[in-house]
Length: 155
Image (tube, rainbow, N blue to C red; front, top):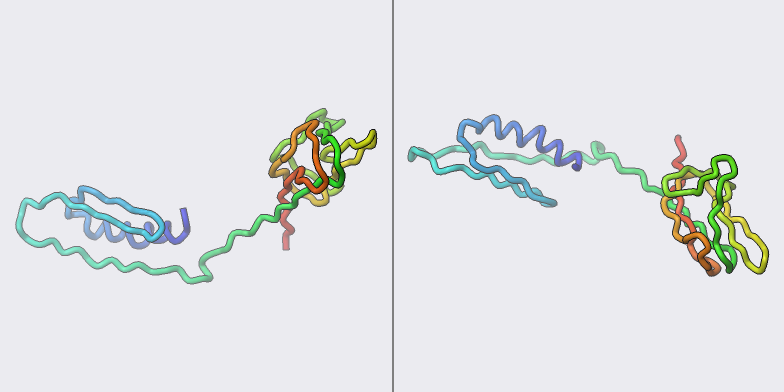
């Protein structure tokens, strides 16, 4: 939920409902992006008009809204033509999977071409977002093999 919407509900809508709560609303609904509010009331048993205070919306100032940091995604591409093989870690005997942390220079897999083996290493520290190719899959030069979310630097 956006901060503007939460602020609106906490500051304005709840106050409005508390002030007008004695009027027995039968339905309250909120809608999406441009925020449409429908408040329905069952038919009154008396003929006097009901006065509802005017609702004023306020917009938060720019300083109140904190931008979310953009994720930097590094695409690791094949540097040769050949067959891609997953790399099994010798210590843990496990294959890499999305969500695993990797360090710069860590071997992620290798490509075998004409009986030569070319390591695929991570150029950055981060987390694996996606493993694009499967084990023993034929790859072309420049094909994306992995997508890694770069570790954000602290200031």
